[in-house]
Image (cartoon, rainbow, N blue to C red; front, top):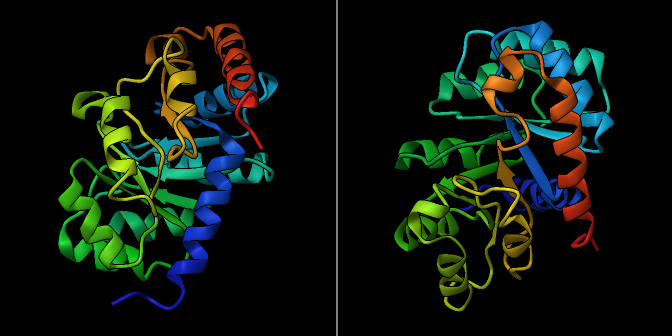
Length: 221
């Protein structure tokens, strides 16, 4: 059964993804590091991020970033269970991103009171999401499950779905992904690799973000 608020949340998710164009997937080791990387990304022209819940610093960083950069759009990523979902909401996340979901988690995400971009890797998983009312999905891991070929194959039978493919995408093929009619946004970490963050090379982050912004601007409507 479709949750009554889901259609509105899905429309918001699609708007946020289209506005982002390219969504940096950020994993941080400290709040200070998160501040520095977001400052560099914004200087490069990227104002939306997916902050993964893969480190103990993630939730404190999410809260701190929302206070320091109120205009920043933050999606909490790698949300795997209801406890993480609630923690991300309480920390101030603007939307939720998952790599996939169990049947019970799909129901929980459908009822969540904020936009959700739920991950899937197969047509069957996508049909389950559509059955619950989702119309925006994260194709993950995109390159490993067929990349652009997979997106082209899905467009015919699942034409109602829009995607944010993530996983294995680089600056070299970002434009090819964005050119697909069923792609609203792409996610990638090539502009925020952990070694740059850990060594404080935020100038490289800024330069890579500016290149990503230039690519995404070609496909904004």
